Amino acid sequence: MDITVAKTAGFCFGVKRAVEKVYEQIDVSKKQIYTFGPIIHNEEVVKDLEEKGVKVINEPEDIEKIGDATLIIRSHGVSKEIYDIAGKSGVEIVDATCPFVKRIHDIVNKESKKGNTIVIIGNKSHPEVEGIVGWVNGKSYVVSSEEDVDLIDENLCKKLCIVSQTTLNYNKFNNLVEIISKKGYDINCLNTICNATHERQIEAKQIASNVDAMIVIGGKSSSNTQKLYEICKEQCDNTYYIQTVSDLDLCKLNSIKSIGITAGASTPKKIIEEVHANVRNEF
Ligand code: F3S
Image 1 (cartoon, protein in one colour):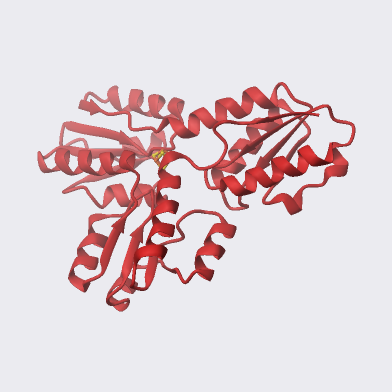
Image 2 (cartoon, protein in one colour):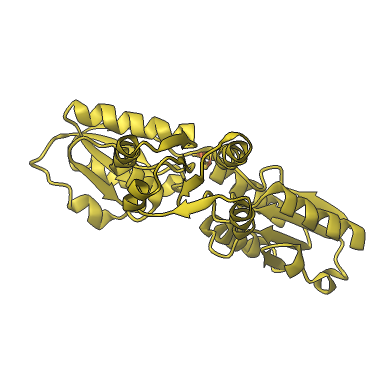
């Protein structure tokens, strides 16, 4: 059996850094540790942290109730309001915001203070975008479709600063920027897409097109794993979506000569290695 494990499988730089920060805090902090929202979309990791005493809060109002505690901000960041509330409540913040996201916060903050209107291309309800909006000083628009572009108030300001959600698709970003450009605004466009997602997808596609079967590992609610599965399935009909090694039905791989393995951004290395070892030992 020929097994290929994607080099880009699993945690991206920002997620790895955030998860490591939580484990670091477990070792050093004398206070109760909270994360603002689950640190990643992976039930195994969240369960393990819970067993080690880490609690999750989800609402800004909860911050005032946790007292003298440590609050960890996850990789996709939060609005300025959250830092302000924590500061007033005496809660210690450990900031695991990915530096690529932090850069967007700084851009929108600076540009909006100059009086420019901010346009964020991305999904309005994604926590990363909600966080970015929360660093704008003034007016901002979140755009995810052509119809959203029409909602930008043309009289408000002719100077626009455009940024993107880090996980956005390049084509979507370019298309929407082109539509906005045709409206005659003075535009300062900054492509803030992070390559990690794109690179993982390209590698998964390339592996899936060369193997007899493909295994995609990731949490059920992970949208980037779902996307990886779709990409692989298009290339290789024998593509299986599993959460952990226990979901793997090895009987299905019986007559197969080559297999590829990839994983979503929130899948821990340990789970990828378990699946890899299981396949290798069986065949
Ligand atoms: Fe950061 Fe890119 Fe991951 S923005 S959290 S390294 S997808």
